[in-house]
Length: 153
Image (cartoon, rainbow, N blue to C red; front, top):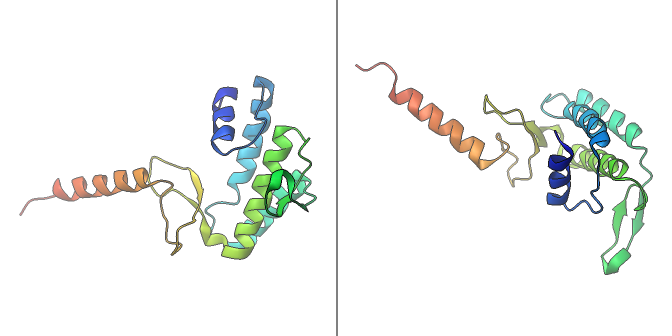
């Protein structure tokens, strides 16, 4: 990871004031590793424990706000907090909501063997198995080629 790649990711997810330095990279990497515990285990107790640890680390104090003409919505840390604190709060709080309302099966890891990305399954039927359609298509092509190159009668 680099400061530039993290900054691009934060901007892609509309995290405001995404200024980070090279010194912040290690902190984001540690947080990424802590987040990983919540994905893919399939065991609700393990996922609850992982998310609870994240909530403690993020020091969340939720409140409802209507700033900038928006509808009432939750904030987990003051808007003046540094970007790492805001990211921790949003990710920990978001995972808690998903786990409580949708269940642990919605927190997954890509099944493509060369990919280990985590994802939150937002599909209607909750049957997502790959992080992106591209990974799913790549895996399907590999299976197809494997069948075609198999033993011939």
